[in-house]
Length: 578
Ligand code: ARG
Image (cartoon, rainbow, N blue to C red; front, side, top):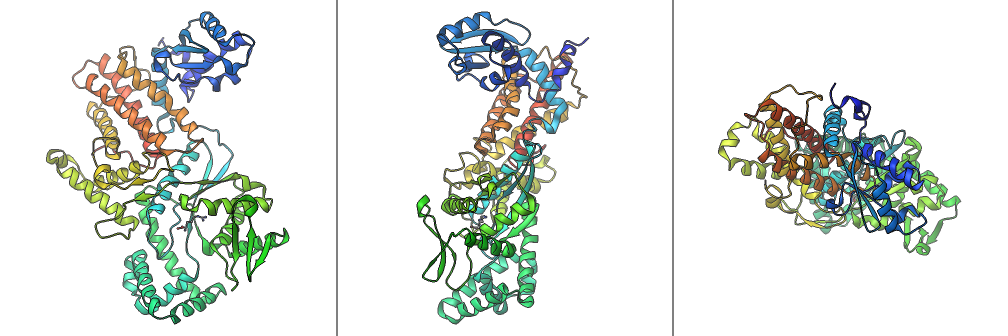
């Protein structure tokens, strides 16, 4: 009988730390009279790992008596068993030690069996969320704010999916307004069918720039644009068909670029898609008496909430960005009945979103409180060699090229890579993404191509390298592994350290729901990669006898699974060769 068979039922648990927490909670419950369910969330990793594996602050239990005395008494009374191997107190903290060998056996087996689902949980089961992100403007540059929204938004969607939510990804394009009248005029003057088909995003942008220059010296162009846009608003089929071609072709091109980033949008919405709901929303605002007249314009006064005055209709009757957002929110709720909705938008729009949420709240829409703004800081210094105007594919191309030249520096390795251009593309993307996620979202950062493509330091290439190194060891060993391999020789501190880190993964994924900080995952992945690198130096697989090689391979496989899952969570494609 394998030593694990007594614990077979536990191996099915998706979160091994919880198995140990439950064992600790049972004993503390018997001593304190507080239920295990209440105690489990209070069991945390001690600030100083030397104190043990889990700790509970006795004052939090609100028991009668001196907490320090109680902590001491509990420490003495805790019974050592297969799960809990030590108990001490540090002041009012009760610190517990768990059996590292049992953890190793249970955890590696469970990761091995769960594979790509390791770390997922069901807390969001039955709930639906909309994550709106990226949302560029047609015929305008895809700037750094859009890039961050794209990267962070994809992460927010992945985190929800990993926590069991039904997740709808939505792109809300800037595709309506007078500027599209201007664009259409420009197309008449400068447009080329060939260019449009080749690269609609760039061609439309070029035209837009040219017509704006023309408009500077010819004031009638703006009037023409206004009346053209009026025809669009009135639903004139001819002008709308041109506009929807621009829109469709741009979306097609965007889809290709997003695919490179592993991103898929369930819905391409946009400011142009909300007219009907916007009118509905406007009527609701009037009925609630929220609309005031101000020199011909219609406004909502939010001074009371320190949110200023919001213009919702200009004196010429045209509506605004905010008016469209109110309509869009209504449309989304009526269409999807979401439980939560996230807007992933740069901090420049903090006020805009506060105003939007307040207005929805004043409309007494119960779901207004379920709308969240995921804000983030600015990127400075993002330009490409070609200049300051940036497009997403230019950034990706430049990252790819820079990465490629870094790879070329190591000729031997380069020669072994089957498709170096593809690898350079994926590693280049990892570099951009990891740099973006290295610090808390709200921080500004400086775009630094040199730094992000380095294989040393806290970079995307370093993480990809760690993953591909594991893949290569497993591939070269070419052994059949199963979850019942005896792991008892795997007792070195560096191996048990890796096991500890792997065990934290499910809790980390769950905790991401508080705060949604992608840097948590990046830091976790770096910590795991560093611990692994220490392990790989000491614990070899090649030319080792089976009783050593096989358990090590199980460890490396579980580590590869976990690191791969973490990288996918931030939107990366983990590489097996590079
Ligand atoms: N298109 C906008 C821009 O580029 C971002 C849209 C953000 N989402 C929203 N629902 N307002 O600034």
